[in-house]
Length: 275
Image (cartoon, rainbow, N blue to C red; front, side, top):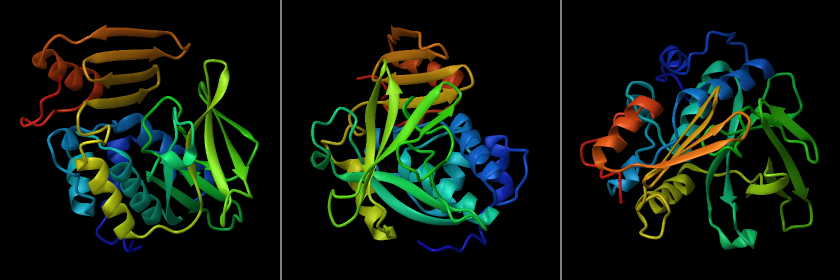
């Protein structure tokens, strides 16, 4: 994808995520911007639920995620974060991963998750950035691409594993510490992905009848107090201490009110939220 960010409105993006810190391309800014993004822009699949693949054009991403009360899924979030980091002076390369939560075999899942490898000027260490995974097992901040090291941010605990003999390229796996054990989140290699690769994956995830995002509302928001998830009609709230409370939403009007009040989302008129 093009490195040109001349038409990217960095000021509007930083206002959207509430970032008032420095704009220097250093590790502090990298970590802070990703965390501010994750806490400010929700994860949601309302466009696929309405039968359309989200646009990944820069102007459309800005209109939807920055200037409207909407969120998006991984391709949208990380394309937006990519442009912001480049505008701040970081070198960013797109990569792709396989979501393997609950999978018995890594190869049973396609590469449908967008990730970013980030280089900080003057620092030889590459970093993994990802603002588009959405779940409590996701990275809250960018982390160094280093294996077998635990990373903590708030109540979240993550680590990266490396299998150098997996194939032609070494395989990295992100894990999260959940329910007293380490669980796989996604796996990836560091080969470069081009725009057409994401275009195909986005179309599949956004329109295929077997995609998890085309049949059920799936909305998430990370807050300072914990994590919110709407999956179909089930609303789950996870507190910072891990306590989970759940309730079923009863009708479409209530679902739209919950999206508005808890997630900061104005749902499109052509979306049916409840199954």
